[in-house]
Image (tube, rainbow, N blue to C red):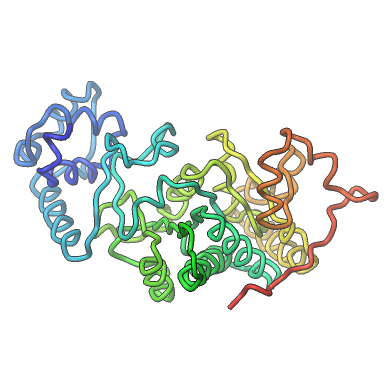
Length: 357
């Protein structure tokens, strides 16, 4: 499909057709030569090309073309690069998933997407121990040349990105710096927008230290609540393993863990998820969820989706990055019978914030 790539408008246009699947978008892309041809299609024409009846009031060829044209201008202004699903640089781990994005849009060092990676996720309501754990784990991972993937959210995500950025700065100051892992922030909107806004400076540091900002949404796409959940699958898919640092019941980080399980990836929990402070936060959130469930505002699954559920299914607990590396090399399930103390409970974790700066 290299012959189609000079016309960036066509794949942009196709990417913005939200009612089409990954395969259907590829069919449209293969069967049309330019964006003008797509703009002239009716919904019946599209249905005929993809082989199924498409019903969507959202389809307006001319309006969708205008959005693609605006996205092209934004890409030029913000130095946003596209990744087509046929490109060699498109992350192989992501491509193999059943709901992979048709395109990716990124700013910064796209090589981070295909280097060694580990996904680090957690709650926005982090404890001091959780913050220190996320920061330290990410710092050590990047020092080892592994890129840290997270969602740039407040809380654990931000702490992980900050630890990764600090590692990159420290590597630059060494006499013989080795390749820096960097960090990847997956956004729930177009890559031209930073969410949350208070992390704009952090996003700038990610870019200046060799990391990247990436999204499946073309530039100009606004943030919406459902996009946060949708982007979690990309965080899970970009790495062979997801480390959950802290995650009270119903946490979005546990949805990322669910995606990782669905993708047959490793899921590990940091011991910081089982401190006394983490237990207090979990109890408070569980009470809130139970009240919401009684009022019909929350699903029962949110209450039942807890770190303990994953542990009962054999998910291992790790103490730090070095322990994570040891765990990767162990026989699967080896820790499930070793990680509890004599009372059958997980040992408490003592946070170490010595690297935090």
